[in-house]
Structures are given as structure tokens and as C-alpha cells.
Image: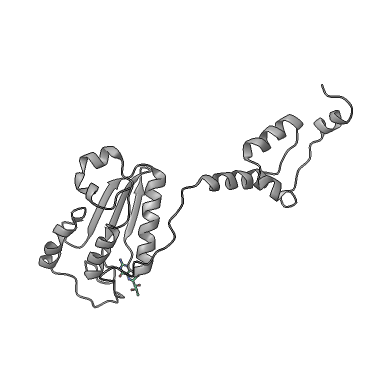
Length: 198
Ligand SMILES: C[C@H](O)[C@H](O)[C@H]1CNC2=NC(N)=NC(=O)C2=N1
């Protein structure tokens, strides 16, 4: 057992207020803080530990692509106020061959695309990138992420309650967004290999 000044140090239990030691915690991985805490019976405030943990985790988080407006695309969405006519089934069916990853709903009012991503981070990165395109275009799909890596994108125009040209434009733009697929899923859906895959 350590004697003298160390005995006081080992029995000193002090709450280190995270604000005055923030810089130390930010540069000290959580595991070191816990080890020091155990060795010297020093208790760190939860905020300090969580800050350090979040800081070390955020350094290893995958890069999220910044929003990028695809202004170089040939066609862009137009503000979809009410009154726009829904597309005819003939128009939608004429375009579908150019959108092999998309399925038309039975009521012909929605386009959807589903896939299994490589992992949760890949699913989130894809959804985030699609969100950036939607914000640029002012036209927003329904985005579903289930079972940690099942992604589904659903396109329709709320103002019309069906499909408009905006949805066709968005489907084509979304197909330019890189996606990291589950290798098993990609093997079962070779047509996806021709789209922007990573
Ligand atoms: C004014 C602006 O165009 C509307 O609010 C947009 C926003 N994004 C939209 N997204 C979709 N999918 N349908 C809409 O009707 C819609 N309307």
C-alpha cells in the first residue's frame, strides 16, 4: 500500500469539474480516464467522461459528405404547389426502364427503392446524402431505415397525392448517390452494381 503523500492521493476522491479540465479530458481517451479513476480512486464527473468518450468516438466517426447541390444535373425539381397534375401511368411506365432500381406501387402513386446496406454507418451515410439532394431540390422522399441496415426510399408528391416530374427527377438524382451494399444483397441484385455503388 502506498504510504506518505501517495496514501493521501490514493484516498483523495475529488469530483473534477469538467469545465476547468475540459481540454485534458478532450485529449484523453475515455479508457485512460477510467484507469486513472480506478488507480487513484479519483472520480470524474460524468460530463467529463462522456465528453471524452464522445470526442474520441467522433474522431473515428465516418466522414459525412457535406450537402452538395447537384446544380449540374440536367433537370431540377420545381416548387410543387397544389394543382400540379399527377403523371399519367403511360408517362411513368415510359420512364421506368431508365430507373431499374425503382418499383411502382400498385396504385401507381409512389416510386420506391429498397436495399440492404453493408452496415448501419453505410445506411446512415446514404440517407444523409439523399437528404442533402432533397434539400437542394426542395423535394423530399420518405426515408426508412429498419433492422439497422434495411433502407427504403419512397417518392411521391404530397401536394398532389401522386407522382409528378419532380419524383422522376429525384429518382434519377438519388441513383447517382453512392451506396455501400451488403455483398449478399448485391449478389442477388446485380442491376444495383451498375448504379453508383461504393
Ligand atoms: C414549396 C415546396 O415546394 C413544398 O413545400 C415541397 C417541399 N417538399 C416536398 N416533397 C414532396 N415529396 N412533396 C411535396 O409536395 C413537397 N412540397
